[in-house]
Length: 95
Length: 98
Image 1: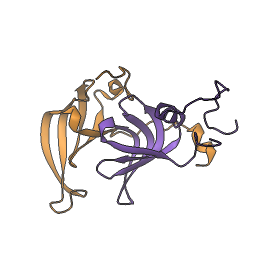
Image 2 (image 1 turned 90 degrees about the horizontal axis):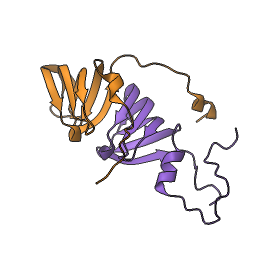
Image 3 (image 1 turned 45 degrees about the vertical axis):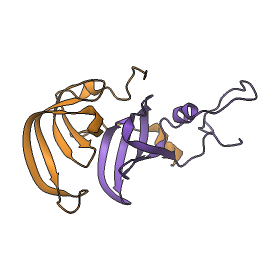
Image 4 (image 1 turned 45 degrees about the horizontal axis):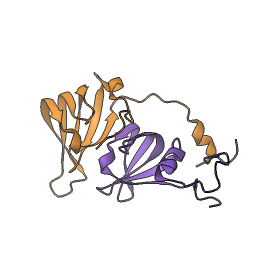
C-alpha cells in the first residue's frame, strides 16, 4: 500500500476538498489535538463525529510542552477542540 | 441545530467501569460510570475529585474529595478515559513510521 493519503478515483476534475474530506482522511493517523485550554493531546485518531467529538488511542497529554499524562484510550468532547493537526500532508499533495 | 446521531465513542462499553473525567476549568474526577446521555451528562458513583494546587491549576495537589454519586454536566466534560489498563492492540498504522 503506497501513499496512504486519500486516493480518490478521478471524479470530476473540479473536485473540491472540504474540511469533512480532511477529517475523513486523517482517521487512523497520528494527530495533535489542541483544546481551548491550551492543552495538547497527541495520539492515534480512532474516530471522529460531526460534533468533532474525538476518540483517540495511545494518547499523550502535553501541558506547556511537557508530557503530563498517558491514556490508552481517550474521548474528547468536541466543543473543547481548538484544532486538529497532522504531520503529514494528505490532501494538499499535488493540489 | 441538527447533528449526526452517531457518536464518536460508545460510552456503553464503559458503564460499570472506572473512568477518569477532565472538566473545563481544570477539575478532574474519577469514578464508576453508571449512566450517560447524548449530551455527555455522566452519572458517576463512588466519585473522587482530585483537587488542584492553589497557585497552579494544572498541578494536582494529591488531596482528594469523596463525592459519592454525582452527575457531571455534559457541557463541562472535556475528556473521558478508562482508568483500567486499556486493551492493547497492535496498531497497523504505526508501520508508517510516523
